[in-house]
Each structure stands twice: as structure tokens, then as C-alpha cells.
Image (cartoon, rainbow, N blue to C red; front, top):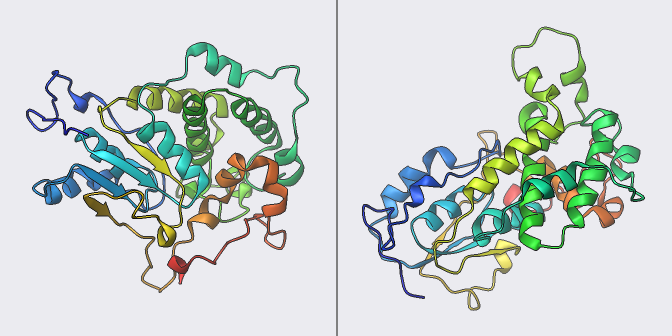
Length: 292
């Protein structure tokens, strides 16, 4: 595909300024959002038209490449991350209308499942919030358009994360939020803000982030070790693996975000849970070579 020529690094030949588009806010562990400009400054002199972001994570680095007019292949082993990539990398123009947002947030006359209410009581959220998650995630799953569905999931994921102490799902620690104690960390106001309000905020941010850079961009869902390089060849590969901390312990993203993975694998969630753990994490915990 013909490369776009930029003026002032961010303006294409039609005069479109991609700087007006901003990656939505996120509280994802290991996000490179604060250093994406530094990353670009260190690779901008390399000649390349296409790039693979092999461990895509939040998608902020892939989004940076998209803003710079590259053909971007985002990849992540987690399905929920793959959906984030669908929403803001592969998606060029599909946004959620006000009417679609209202459909998602409305409890209809459907026979809604109650899996989250039945299995995650007193673990991550209040029971009324679990009910909200059951019916809203059901409504999202029944949107016809894949990209609109992905945008809706993006808003749901971010709402789930922002309402969690530590922004993670690695512990069954709802008590941190509900206990009447003096707090030295966190933001109880944010935790107690309704899911609906957070969802609307993040959908608005996601809608405003979507644009077409006139190049083919994809979001894939491969294990990095099995990525089909021959099929998806690219000029440049960006590799940012899960990291090992100072104690030699790897970052297990499946354990950190298993609840979000469950939301997008709702119909098989029951078979994926490891019941011996109080936070009901998912099969595959600790098995990735990147945590060793």
C-alpha cells in the first residue's frame, strides 16, 4: 500500500491532522502511554511502512504507529486485548451512537444470564454492580457490528478497571473499597462512581479516538511464539514482552485481567475458572513462559 506522506510529521497530503486524535485513557499495568513520544523519537529515522506490535497490550504504541501513517498489525494473546485492538487500531470509522449506548445500558425483556452474580459475589464488585455487568455484557454481545461491539467492550473494560483497587483482578479484595477506614491510597470516589457513568465517559473517549489513516491495520490474537511471520510480514517488529520485577517474579497478565477475559468468553467462562483461588482466576494462570 502506498505510504502516506506527512507534513510536519502529523499532517497528511489531504491536510488531516492526526494529532487531533488521542488514545483513550487507561490504567493498564505496564502501559507505555507516557513514553510513546520518546519511542517514536528513537525510531522515526528508520525507513518502514508496516509494523507488527507483537505484545500489543493497551494498544497505545500501535495507536502511535497508526497516527504516523503506518500499516499496523497489533497482536496480543489475550482475547480482551485483541478486542481493544479491534476497537482503536483496526477500526477506521465505526463509533457508537447515543441510541446504541442507550440500548446497551437498558435492561430489556430478555432472559438475562446471571453468571457474574452467581459466581463473583463479594469478590470484585457489589452485587448490584454484578447484575449490571451481566445484562450490559449480554447487550454488548448482541450488537451486530463487530467494531461497534469492540468499542462497547473497550468502554466496559475501562469501567471495570477504574473501579478496582490497584486497577487489577489479582485478589478478592472488595473489602478494600467497602471498609470504613482511613485510606492512604486509591480513590474511593472513583470506585463508588456508577458503572454507567464510567462507561459513558470511556465510550466518548473511544469514539473520539477512532480514525482512518488510509492504511490497512489489523488486530490479531496469537501467542507471540506462534505468530505466523510469513503470513503477516512487516518492515519493523516492536517487541515489548511482559517484564520480570526486581524480585524475579514475572507479570502474569492473565491473572491480572482474567475477569476481563471472562467477559468476552462469557459462554465458556464457567469451564475456565480455577475454583481453588478465591479470586476465581482462569486456567492458564502461571503457564506462560513470559512469567518464568
